[in-house]
Image 1 (tube, rainbow, N blue to C red):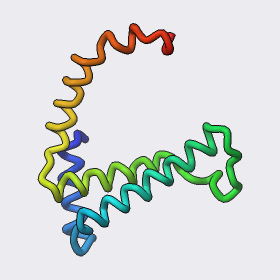
Image 2 (image 1 turned 90 degrees about the vertical axis):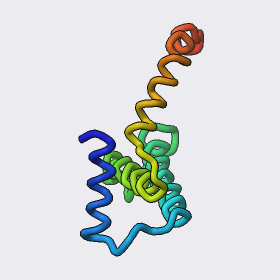
Image 3 (image 1 turned 120 degrees about the vertical axis):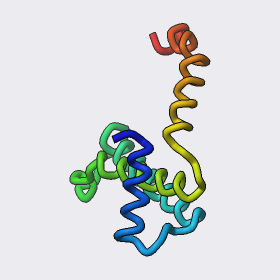
Image 4 (image 1 turned 60 degrees about the vertical axis):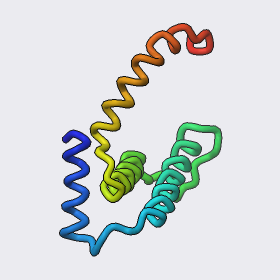
Length: 108
């Protein structure tokens, strides 16, 4: 599934199962909450913090999917074609950063 198809799938889900999109500010707060859940798993599972027993069964993939879902909601409700925006961003990053990272001594 490409990003454009994912945006359509989310929109269809909202129409079939949700009442409506939460407003943009609510979705921004929701996105922040979901990113926080991802950060908690990463910090405790891959970082230096010890993982609480209650967090050991948390699914990182599921939490990342929650982030993607809310981003797709925000794109839909603000009229952003995320496929086009992502493709453009990849072109920009490729042109700008192609040699930059290869020449970074910190990455060697």
